Image (cartoon, rainbow, N blue to C red):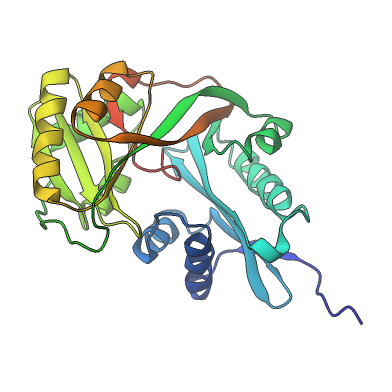
Length: 275
């Protein structure tokens, strides 16, 4: 007898976070429990879960910046529940929610497997996003050097990204090592599999190099991930120079109004789920 229950989509609840974290762990993703809690804090109305058979089996998130740009992430489905249309159902729910909020532009970073689904939902490819990694010991802690992000850096980030992300940066700063210069900054925070380098913004190549060197020195021998836009060829050169290797490639996709920042100033994104 089939006892399966009808799938139900609902806003992610705080008591769902542990199961959501288990989904991302099972997928081998780098997000921590703290990353999930941050998404829930910043976008309590934009995180959604699909429940079936009495458990959480799929998730997605929508983080909105200034009411104009929405970033979709954490599109996950339990291995036993794939190929049932759950991811599509959740994404359609999120798109309906975003349209009701009149969010002009939606973006996401898609895997090769997910790209066809996003295309069917009206997204178009914008540019590649690459993950670069530096080998190391993922269990070896990096030096904890918390810092404050000066207002000037918030301004630089706003100019580079094209929109204000002060709330996100403020939340990330509570658990990140931060290094700043006159014209840039770099964050590094703990990840499940490796330290995560980013967001990383700089107006000038020389300052970007100095910031990354400082950041890596404090990381010691810890393994690190760095997600960059290869359109910024200087970032690719810097990654190679400092011993990073290309690990995987995703595709940045967009739906809605055209929106762009200064990609030449963006040396590292904040995360696939954050932009």
